[in-house]
Length: 161
Image (tube, rainbow, N blue to C red; front, top):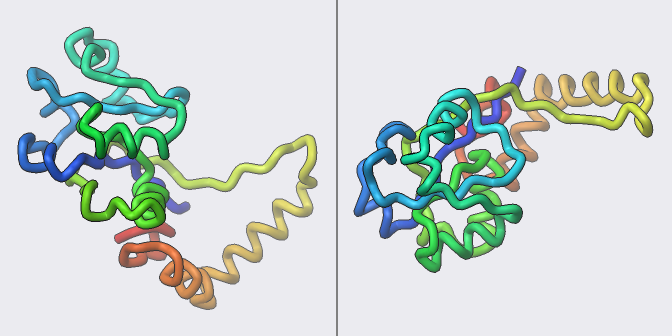
């Protein structure tokens, strides 16, 4: 099973201001955290967001692309985001020099592809799984990944190393 880590990305200014190695390091600081509405960031985040001192510094957002703009304009200091999609978005938006990945991994959940039971047959899902397995074992997945994703590939995670 692949994994999909949610990590903390910060502005270059915030990376010089705050020394963060865990999400709890934000407590007691003025760090403003952006968190996407409706996203599950895991048990550590759930425990922290229940604390008024932490929750007071969290800014909810609906659009991550809009949140990157908030980050680069100094309205927030950091964003929790899926590592791979964040790296791709930052590259597409030309923000790789303005935003950096921190060592803070908020959660690591199994990565999955979801299909609608209403519109996709079980046969299609089985065929998809077989095709993905073939792409991984043949090396084609790595080849495609390296063409589009700006990080070193880990086949075990089906993501960044």
